[in-house]
Length: 95
Image (cartoon, rainbow, N blue to C red; front, side, top):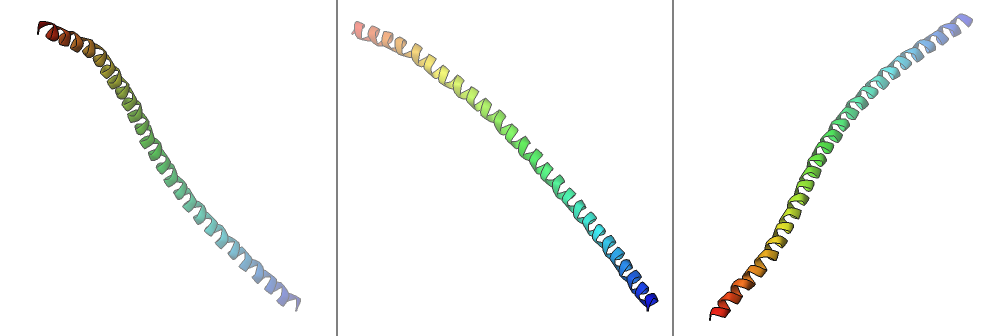
């Protein structure tokens, strides 16, 4: 009876060892899969950073262009209005 009980306990230990190996194998697979997913998220994160970096550069360029455009329009308006008034004055004076 003790021998039979010992065999059953050994069988249970063997099954538990098999179960542990199987569980360790599955955890290894899950860890590998999470590693792949983390790598993909890092790729997406780098791509977003690249795209948003390009957008920041475009935004800076657009602001600079807008400022130059506004400054040029104001300067031309500041020069054009007095010149037009002078030309209009000369035109009216000679009539």
